[in-house]
Length: 354
Image (cartoon, rainbow, N blue to C red; front, side, top):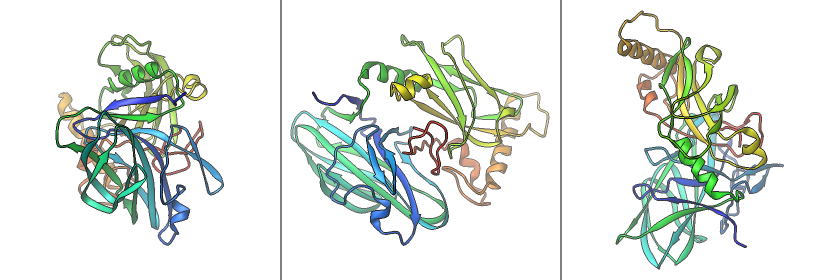
């Protein structure tokens, strides 16, 4: 009996759904073997929650999805000159033999394998390669790495371009057998949103469902830093008429945070029902000026968030240091993941518990 698989379409030609291993950080002079738990020939088939032994502990393949910019982002902070490395895996299912071009947009250096054969080495910026897809399953493995100190940008997007219109699906092997429920929940969670992107401390943080769903939507919402530190969580029944009310912003620290939506924790961990969705948001101090107009009040809150970003040394998906380009914070919709299997907290940068 073959393993169950999660099935996704390409989005505007891009691979939006991956299995991810990492990121792994180390000194700049670390040998490849210390930051690459997979063999160099990399002819593997990954599966969600498969364990890989690395430096005396287990790391796990977990699912990750792109945002609207079609990118997976593992940008973060390295306190000394070092290297960050991450692996991503997906399978492309084709109905016939097809010649396609893989176009990669890369921040960092990308190595790419197709069906165990290296097709791209040290790709940077805009890189592409032509591969032949055989009928059935074709494995794509990417290794992305970046060297730097301070804020290190590491991101990748992959577009599949065929000469003629064709049906290609992305399939990800998983241990979850109730595939229909898992993917219904993923679609439901993708239709949730927070009421705003920037909260002042007196405001409640509500999770809203934009469309009706025939799936019972009892959800858990965890409020945490991009680093994985958890400050609050709540659970409730989510419908279009009834949002789930979580923490008030005053209960959370100021700065960048995440609202992570999952099924109830018993189902998430014990039944391995790993549907999840992440909403970035910011908490700022109360606006210094009093505004009768909500638009002016929001503008003041955004300026406060930008001021906080400019003075914060560790930022996720933003500029590091005291630069003046932090106005991009509201357009930055990055999702990062970590492979450490712990239900409490994640010790690696820019991750959250699996």
